[in-house]
Image 1 (cartoon, rainbow, N blue to C red):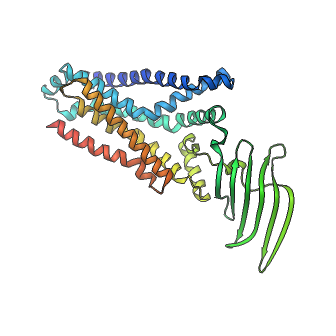
Image 2 (image 1 turned 60 degrees about the vertical axis):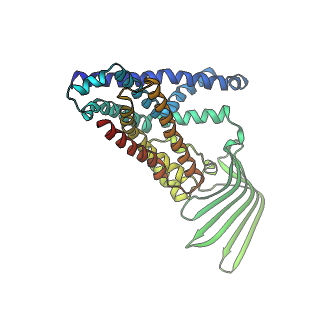
Image 3 (image 1 turned 90 degrees about the horizontal axis):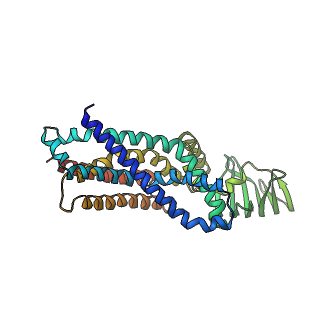
Length: 357
């Protein structure tokens, strides 16, 4: 590896880490300013707050890492261009493709780290980060379930019109049991509640309808304690759960959710696709950043940074828009994860060809 390669790699990684060290403390201070009154009001233990901000750093860095990387490359490459270092390198006979090599090596280092962090570190931090928010910050009704219909095994389906995870209580509960595609019995209750001390469910206004050929039998009770083939947590599907699982557990979770007919299956599939697409964005954003900032322009570094910030937020914007489309419609999770990368990939090829002329 030549001295030039080591110089670029060192500049790339140092500037990227500098961007993280500058912006993350600012994000922490902004978040702290917003939440400090709630911290005082709820008398949250200091250790919990420290742990929250440790997880916040990973969560925030993973969320905006493409912008940090993009700005880092534009920043130091623009400085090289303004000092005529890029022109000197290219004038010495080195091709633009060869000039890109240390950038691609650096992007590979960032991509590998991002991949490993996204698979093993960020999921655990995301779990603790979201649990803290719902325990101390968010309103209690944020996690309520409405009109949940779910397959819990090969023969049984459940429905609940409303479930409160804080009180562990649901209303208008029903369970249908099928055998050979025929409804054998159906359980109805005005409310269902989990009794932690007894580790069972308590149903109020209980009715069981038994179907035997042409006969139908009713069994009614004002209250009954029983157990079912599902956990109380199944009545409250957590939208962020997929983000909190390592890749192997995520695959098992998705398969389980697919079999149960979960309404959130597309959201979970999107999370899995992004585990792969996010690290790969390092290469595309690096090529775009180098292509637009490696030559002197009128306005200097300011123009390049403005362009970089705009393009970076466009990338994030489309990423979020497609995420909303997946959540609110039948839009393909694969398309939502890979389409922004594909579009920016085409842009990187165009800018690269233009820079090589």
